[in-house]
Image (cartoon, rainbow, N blue to C red; front, top):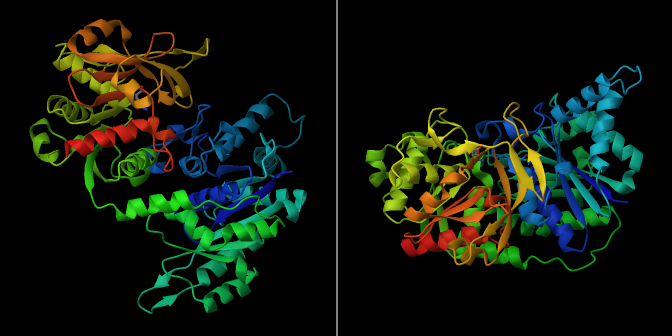
Length: 538
Ligand code: GLN
């Protein structure tokens, strides 16, 4: 039977619970154990798919087409295990399932209540879709003490009681602030947070203390005493210089060792930290810099393009160069200032996006990249806008546009409601906004002798999608005659998946999101190639 590790957070949010869970998962996996990492989100949205990136950061998409919390991206990048739909749940999803069941009369006249019905549904999620995993790490979003997260805390308490202490472990992550004025490390917030957790019936087994400075023994003792955990189980996590150092730092602090000791287990093989040491060194030591512009609508929020930022950095690691991400708000990009704004930029990237705001700025930047032969990568909406730009300025279809943005345009990008997946038609719709797009992994065929084929070194690829609109395939010949090649197509030849320019050193648009599949230890070929092109353009 699997062992369950529950990770809660206290004091403040954004302490790096996701990164801690991901690092622990890597350490356990590297020692020969099979691991799954899951996230429970206390908000009322059914999934984060309809949430603005300003509110919640990026929406991470899994192979099987779930729109999930961005922490699942951390888990995948650190463990190289593809997350599934069954790895993320929200309060909204739980309530929507329960209410559906209630309407069908499935509760046989009972009063439907938070305890036991909501907590039962949470427990079902925790143990659902598990086969032979040794460890299931479940992170609980939010901060202990929030009203929203109460049912989750109650459910994990019940769960642990049911499976027993030998099969369940509680890790609580807190903040141990350093007060500059008094030059002191403060343990009180941690004491209070653990007290709060204990008042909900949970005694943490391990307390992980996030701190700016190393925590002296005296303070550790204090935490141990007041929080009722052994001193070895007070683990510090001091701010790392790069996130790739996190697994090394948790190993040095013996987090994995204490977890294995708790479960009376021994490592099945020796942990391998070499890859993390190598990329940490590479990230910290590299002096050469390449400036990449990300031109989008959500650039002011750091987490809005999390996987993309990561994938670009991975591309830099592959090319031994530091990628400086220059975030440019597309709304502010006026055609007559583009020269100045993009002067020191060696590669231009337009990420995915929705809606009209900022599109003309993106189109101007694409035009600039195309004419000045600057390496360009358009992702999803970025590809669509590259097609619009080419149609307007090369094919001279002045009214070319996307039917998403302008119902009266000449739709070179149009709405499609059906997709073929493995011979089966999948239906999308734009009536409901949540979960109704072309989502998850789809195959694409690559054209022989194309740039894209030389990058992937493969005839077919599988990448993750998240969009409702498609490039209009009826104009393919016109585009190709003018030099924009549809070099990747869906297997049934109906949907253009990749475009590239013949007379340009590196200009590629992809309808999918390659960033979701890039890993620090195995950078995605498309990003490695893009950064390589930008590096030689410097
Ligand atoms: N808004 C576009 C569509 O739905 C692009 C989506 C995206 O970039 N992820 O097709």
